[in-house]
Length: 124
Image (tube, rainbow, N blue to C red; front, side, top):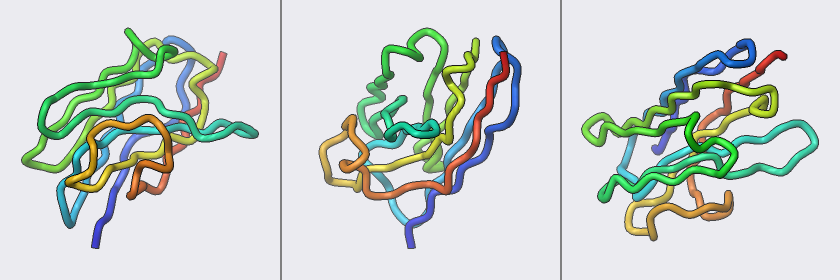
């Protein structure tokens, strides 16, 4: 079965850093990345990377602070989060698109598989 296992998250002060990983088992994917959901808000795109092309995409609010990378041999993606802000506080969900589908997309409904979610809390 397909399983996405997330590691990372935690409580940090503003300006701090966190590193996430998301490991997939069972199959390969056209794209993997993260969405996040803050209390009372809808789930939003954060970042994703294509399996084949290495093309990476970021929401404007994290550009220059977050970096996504991949290791295709391990079916794993990594998210380095620097200069964290209180506004980054949310549950972060790893997500993957099915192999054969169009690569990176920007809405949750386009992603077939999801991790369990990890809490990021950034204090001011």
